[in-house]
Length: 70
Image (cartoon, rainbow, N blue to C red; front, side, top):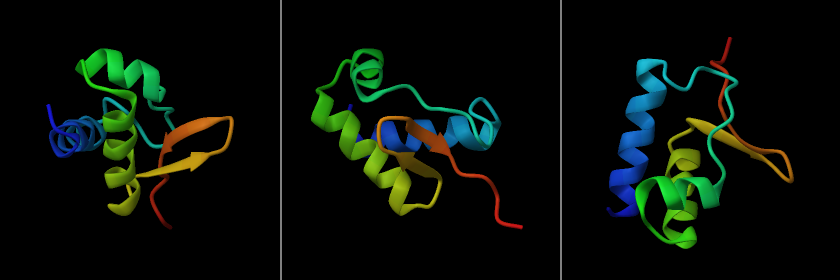
C-alpha cells in the first residue's frame, strides 16, 4: 500500500467513528505492521492526515483524532 492509500483508509475509519474524536491512533511501528509497510510510509500517511486536519500529534504521547472545532 502507498502512504496515500493508508491515509485514505485511516480517514475513512475516523469518519466512520472507528477512531472517535480524541482517540489515539496506533503508533508508527504498529501502523507499519498493520499495513505491512515501512515506518517511513506509516509516518508519511500520518503526515497526510495532519495536513487534512484530521489528527494532531503530541511529542512522546502519540497521534490523536482531532476534536471538532466548536
